[in-house]
Image 1 (cartoon, one colour):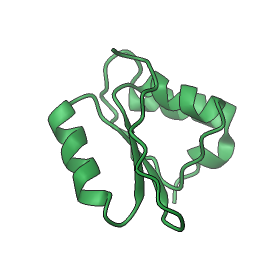
Image 2: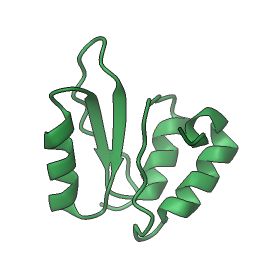
Image 3: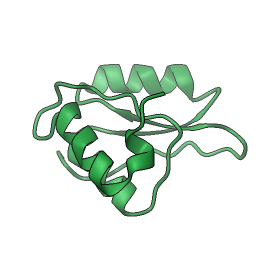
Length: 92
């Protein structure tokens, strides 16, 4: 279901929180598996889901963007994040 924030939260106290936005299920699953041992990871399949999560109060330390997602590209998601939560749109 595109555009619906259904993150898989792998929460453990004291770890960095990352969000993996990727429309390709295989790539998304691989990225989550490769990082969940060291970080708390949530994943979404569309840029609009990123914005929904942030607007609902979710906070992340890192959000690497897939720039070519359908429905809402990473570029458009970044612009929406910059408006809704400037601290999430900063490049580090």
